[in-house]
Image (cartoon, rainbow, N blue to C red):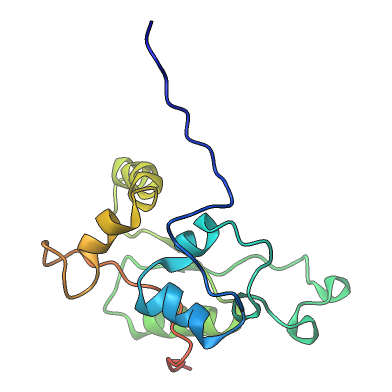
Length: 155
């Protein structure tokens, strides 16, 4: 008879988040100790830290959404054109995201990245951290966090 080990998510975790998840200790846990958001989620937190939520007064009013607009689509076939840079900056500033077309990346590569990303971020923290910026064994690969509260904005 073969035994099967089933691992389930419990409220005990080797990662222990700070008791007050809305504190500087959260930043330390997520950013400085490199646990990331996944590490925070793996601790089975029950509420989202305020650091990661937009205050109600800053949220979009669903009654003011313009449905006749579509997200910006930027043609990057000519990277040297200053209008490409201007379009990217404007879209990032006004929308927060955009779609690029004519980038030259084959669909197979995009599909491979979509398949690889969940596998990579599903690795144990110790394994992922081998690729942390400044420590990565591969010069062109670096793991970083996008959440740096003391960072500055580009616009």
